[in-house]
Length: 228
Ligand code: SF4
Ligand code: SF4
Ligand code: SF4
Image (tube, rainbow, N blue to C red):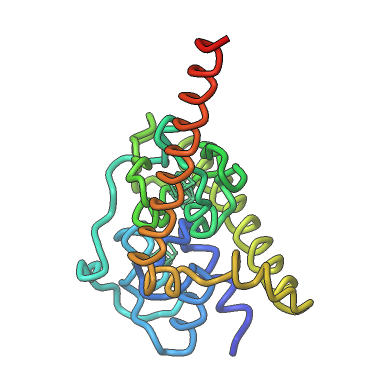
C-alpha cells in the first residue's frame, strides 16, 4: 500500500466522515481507491471538484459522481438537538465519528456546531427523533482559493484529527479489554443499526418508566402536603 498516495487522496477528501462512499470514513475510502478496490467517484460531499482532483492525482480519467452513493449538498448543515425531547440515551454520541456531541447518560445532549461535519450519522439512531440537520450560513462552492475554501480546509483538517483521535481512543479501549465499556459504548454503527429497533424500544420504555415514577412521586408528595 502506497502511503504517500493514500495521504494525498485523503488530503483531497472532505473529511465529513459520513460513510456515504460505502467505507467507514474518508481514510478507508482513500485506501480503497489507492488499492483499486473503489472508484474515484463515490464521495458525494467531495462532489465533482473532488473527483477531478483525484483523477489528476492518479492520472486517470475523471467521471461523473456516482449518485447511487448520494448527492452533494449546496449548503453546509450541522446537527441540532431539541434538548426538551432528548432522553440522554447516548446513541448519538456513539454514532458521531468526530466526537462533536457532548452529554452524559440520562442527561440532555448538545452538538458542538463548530466541530459538526454535517455527516448526519447521528440522526437515524435517535429514538426520540429530536435531531435535525439545519443549514448554516455557508454556501458550498467549487472554488479552490476563496476564503470559504480556506475555512473548509481548516475544518477538514480539524475533522480529520478528531476522527483519528476517536479511532485511536476506541482502539485503545478495545485493547485494554474493558468489556463492559466495549459492549456499552464501542459497538460500530453497523452493529447499532442491526439492533436499533430493539434498543430504541428498550430505551423509550425505560424513559417512560422513569417519567411515570417521577409522576407518581410528585403525586405522592402533593397528597402528603395536602394531608398535613
Ligand atoms: S466524506 Fe463521506 S463519502 Fe466522502 S470519503 Fe469521506 S466518508 Fe466517504
Ligand atoms: S453531530 Fe451528528 S451530524 Fe454532526 S458530525 Fe456528529 S454525527 Fe455527524
Ligand atoms: S440519540 Fe437523541 S435522545 Fe438519545 S441522547 Fe442523542 S439526542 Fe438525546
